[in-house]
Length: 527
Image (cartoon, rainbow, N blue to C red; front, side, top):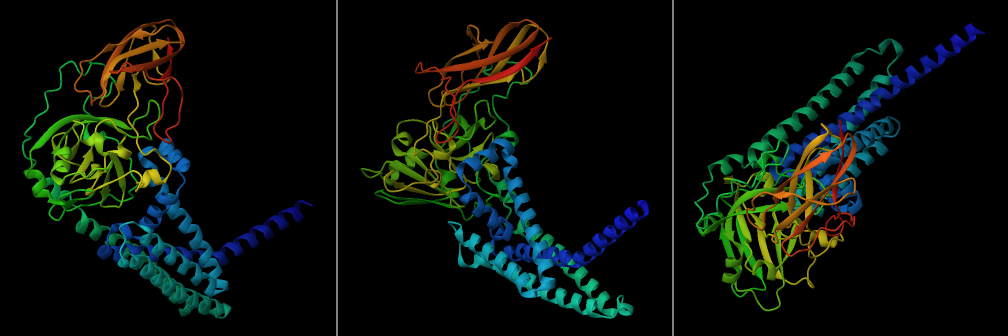
C-alpha cells in the first residue's frame, strides 16, 4: 500500500513537472514580448514625451476613471506611495496578461497576437484620453505592440520548429535557435527600456534650468517669523516645513517638466484685456513674500497633508485688475500643463488676501514636485480649489458655465479650509512617564487665524493650551499643554477656536466632498 502511494505520488509529481516544462516556453514568450512592448514604448516616448509611455498613459487614465472612494482609500492607506502602488498594479496585471497571451499563443498564435494588439490599443486610447494629448501620443503604445507582435510570431514559430524536431534532435540547432532568439528579445526589451528612461530623463528633466533660476528680491518682504512661534518640544512639527518634507498630492505619475525658457501664462476669458506673460515677465513684476499654510482636502483628521512655507510670487489680484475682470465673472480657472483644472472664487482673489503666482518656496525656486516654474496660491481654501501647480493658463469664467476636474468628480465647488488641530506629541500609543506630561501640536484656520486651543484627557474638562506666537492668519499656530496623568491608559483630544469665535466641531465627517471634520485624538500609556 505504501509502495502504491509512493508510486502514485511520484507519478503525480512527474506529471506536474512535465506540465510546468511545457508551460515554461509559453510563459517566457509572453513575458518577453510584454517587456519588449513596454521597452519599445519607453524608447519611442523619447520623442512624444514621458507621459505617453504605455504604462504611464494607462495609469493616468486609470486615475481619472477611478471612483472617488477608491482614490481616497489609496491616499489614506498608501499616502504619497499611492502612485507606486498603482504602477505596481499595472505592471502586475500586464505580467498576468502576458503569461496568458504566451500560453495561448503556443496553441493558437492568433489569440496571443490579439491579446498583444488589445494591449497596444488600450495604451493608445489612454494616451489620447489625456486633456493635453496630441495625435502622435499613440505611437509609443502602437509601436511597442507592433514590436511585441513581431517578437511573439518569431518566438512561437521558432519554438514550434524546435518542438517538432525528433527526440534525438531535441537539443538541435532549432532549439538553440529558439533560446538565442528568446535571449535576444529579452535583452532588447531591457535595453530599449533602460535607454528610453535615461534619454527621456536627460531630454525633459528641467532640474539644471531650475538650478540656474535667480529669484529677485521681493518688493514686499514678509516679517521675520516670531522667535516664539515654535515651542522647543521634541517631536513637534517644524514651523516652516522643509521642501523635502512638504506633502505632495496630485494625479501625475511622472512629474511635469516645464522649461522656464518657453513657459508662458495666458490670462483670458471674461476679461477686457487678455494677457500673456513669459517667466521673465513674471520675475520682472513686483514680488511679494508671504507665509502660508497649505492643506489638502484629502487630509483626514490629524493627517499629514498640511504644511507651511514661505512663498515668493507676483500678486494675483494685480494681474486680474490689469486684465480687467468683466461683470459676472465669478470663477478663476487655473489650468496646469498636465490638463488639471482648479476653480477659485474671483471675489476671494480680489478681496485683499495675499493670492500669489508663486515662483519660490522657502528661499529657492519652486521644487519641480511643487509646481516649478509657477503655481497659484490663494489663502483660505483647500489646494484643490486654489493651488494649481505647473500653471500655464488662467481663465475668467463662471461657476455655472464650467466645472473643474475635481468638481466633475463630485467634490464641492467652493471649499474653505476648516478649523483643524492636531496632536504631534505624544505620538499615538506612546508610553510616557506618569505625572507631568507635555502635549504639543499645531492648529490652523487659514485666512481666519487661530485664537485658542484646548486639550483634554479621558473626556474630562478642557484645559486651555499655551499658544505660540502667531505669524500671520494664513499660517498654522503651534501650541503646548501641560497635563498631569496617572499611570494607565489615556485618551487625549484637541480642539481649536478660530479668530471668528467658531469652535472646531466634534462631528466626524469624511474628506469627501469638502474636507474632514472632528477632533483629533491619541491614545497613550502613562507608566
